[in-house]
Each structure stands twice: as structure tokens, then as C-alpha cells.
Amino acid sequence: MFSNFDFQAIIQALPYLFGQGMVFTLTLTVLSALGGLMLGTLLALARISGGRVLSTVATGYVNLMRTLPLVLVIFWFYFMVPYIGQWLLQESRPIKVGGFSSALLTFIMFEAAYFSEIMRGGIQSVARGQNAAGLALGLTGGQTMRYIVLPQVLRTMLPVLLTQTIVLFQDTSLVYVLSLTDFLGAASKIAQRDGRLVEMYCFAALVYFAICFLASQAVRHLQSRVAIIR
Amino acid sequence: MNYHWNWGIFWDASPEGAGTYADMLIGGLRITLAVSVLAWMIALTTGSAVGVLRSLPNPWLKRLANAYIELLRNIPLLVQLFLWYFVLPEIVPEAWGDWLKSLRDAPFYTAVIGLGLFMSARVAVQVSTGIAALPRGQMAAGLALGLTLPQTYRYVILPNAFRVILPPLTSETINTIKNSSVALTIGLAELTARARAIQEFSFQVFEAFTAATLIYLVINMIATLLMRMLERQMRIPGYGAK
Image (cartoon, rainbow over all chains, first blue to last red; front, side):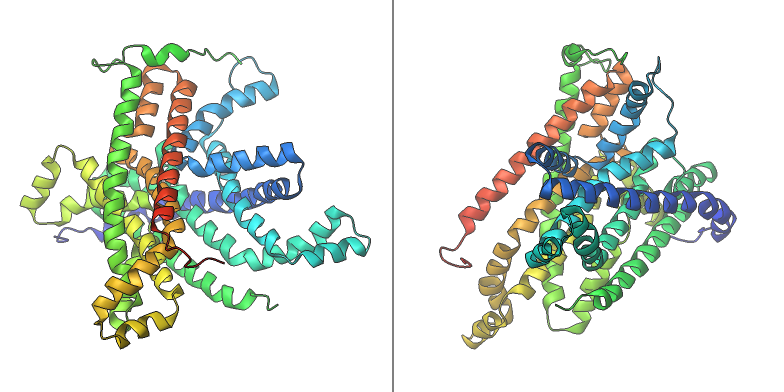
């Protein structure tokens, strides 16, 4: 069964797996989460307090993204971004976009839809009186949102946002379809080069499990600490 | 933009020999639906069983159920599919491994089982949450009436719990359909894979992806409608009304 399981193959691959693969995966996860949170917050605000047109567009976008499989969205952006870049920069031919930039843009645009649903739920859960109180104190609508509502939303929603980020971390493995060298991509390249599929995929599964399990335990712990008691 | 649009592409013969590009998409859609339906059946049955185990008073069964859920939730679906597809045939006895490798529709079976088990962990969480959301008195009342524990589950707890969790199960149904596209990595010719193949054959990338996008939108709408109908059918008049 595991009689010819070769630990040496894993040990030799470690610098490549983590130095290249995991760095790629983590960078992509963190940047996508930050970008997705910012864009998602804007989308949530557009849905709640934008005009009718703006809120319809935002709602349509969020629903569309939530209906499509991530793999299809990755392909969409991979092929579409060069043409959009050409149009924006008024170039004569489609621009070249690197795999990382394409993946980053995809994940920001895709995750924004999910983060916006979380932020929308959060904003709606803040008591309405606070909004009224902010306005009564002479703050503008934007200032009330910025200084009173959003800080509380971020705090109460932090565990949910982090859980979504763990899902995002797992989802970044799908850049495999673009043959990028994320953690799984690195493992798969070594697996195919050395004929060590069993070792590499078992190790990849173990690493993903360890990281996601510990991170979700940490989020659970955090959840009990950041809860605002109203 | 100097992209050359050609919406008539779907009626052109595909280079695969039989049928048009449209037929390729329809073939992909069939596989997406078949995998999703079968995987969803595995997810519902296994997930419900694990969810019930998690709600039982026995701490060991609870731990076993939790271990199952954590294991399947914390490994990306893509990695799980690779484990089933590439690793499993290597670690079972050689004769079984050879048989697995010689299976003609191996990607299909792998996708059904891998996706089904992946989704079962999510279903299990929903089921046990649904059970926990019921008033404790229901269990006590069932037992007090002389029902055994299995009977109480069968006739009192589960019928109520499933009604509570129908809305979240709707989104898990749609997630199953969406996640089936991940199986293109193990060579399953499902909808997204076929759209990608059309792009590779004809270079009409945006037409192919637009068609796939519209098909996914329609499937999701139909799945949502069916689940809403089920919800209405299953509603107990007056129960849970606010």
C-alpha cells in the first residue's frame, strides 16, 4: 500500500512548494481578500443607499457572480481582460496580462460579490437609530457610514469575513486550470515530473487541511471574543 | 475591439466529427446535470446520516461526525478530486487499482463520489444545525409518548428539521451544480470543459462562454424554482408562521 511512499521526494520539494507555491497562494489570498472586501463594501453600499439604477446594477452583478462556477469566471477573465485592457489603453491589439494579475483580478471581482452580501447583512443589522443619531449630530450620510456604521460592521462581521477568506484560500487552488504555480500547481508539477503523484497530492491535502483547520479554529476562538454585547 | 464576433458558430460542425458546436454544449450540459443529480443524492443521504450522528448524545459518535466534517471541509474540492482520481488507485491492492484505472468513465464516477462526499459535509452541518434549532421539547415529547429514539428521529425530529433547512439546502443544491465544473480538471467533459473546448477549436471564446453562462443561469433558476415549489408543498399549514 504505502510501502514505497517516498518521504525524501517531499523533503526535496519543500523549498519549491513553499518558497514559490505557498507564497503565490498566500499573496493571492490576502490581496484578493483585501480587494474583494473593498469592492464588496462599495457594492453593498450601492445596493443599500445607491440610486435605483446603481442598486440594480450592483444587485445584478452580485447575483450573476453567485450563479456562475468559479472555474468559468476564471476563464472569462483570463480571456476578457486583454481585450478590456486594449480598449482602456486604446492599444491596437489585445494587451498581454500575466497569469497572476489575471487571477488576482478574477478573485477580487468574484469574492467582492460574496463579501458584499456579508457587508450588506452587517450594515442592515446595525440599529437604525444609530444612523439617525449620526445625522442628528450633524454628520453627513457618508460620515455616518464611515465613522459609525462601518467600524461596527467590520467588527461584528470579522469572523464571517475571515471564514469567507478561508474558503477563498481553498478556492485559489483552482488557478490550476490556468497552469499557474500556486501551492497545488507546484505540487502537481513536481508530481508529474518525478512520477510522485501519491506523495505530492497527499502532502498537499495535509498542508491545506492543517492550515484551514487551524485557521477555522482560530476564527471560532475570535468569534467569542469580538462579539459586541448589545 | 478587434474581436471577430461570430454567433453562428454554434451551428457549425465541430471538429470532433459528430454534430455541431451546439451539440457539444448540450452534451456538456447533460454530464453537468447527471453528475450534479447523482452527487447531490450522495450528499443528501450521507450528509443526513452524519448530521444525525452529530446530533446524538453519544460523545464518540459526535466526535466521529465532527472529524468527518472537518476533514472534508478543510481540503479544497480540487485536491479531494485529485486524491480520489490519482491517489486512490495507487494505494489500494494492485488488482483493484488496475481495475479502477481501466474504468472507461473513471472521471465521471470520481466526480460523482468526490463531489458528493465534499457536499455531504456541508449538508451534515445544515442537518445538525436544523435539528439543534428545534425546541428541545419535541424530542422529550416523542420519547415520553413511548417512541424509541430512532422512531422519534424518523417521525418527529427529521420531518421538522428538514423543513427548517430547506432554504439553505437550496443554495447547497446550486453549489453542487457550480462545483461540478471543478471536475474538468480530471478530464470530465462537463459544460465548462465543453465551452473551453469550443474556444480551443474555434477561437470564438466569448460566444462559447456566453452560452455556458446563460445555461448556468437557466439551470440555477430552474433549480431554485423547483426547491421553492418543494418548500411550498412541504409547508405545514400554520406551523412556523409569524
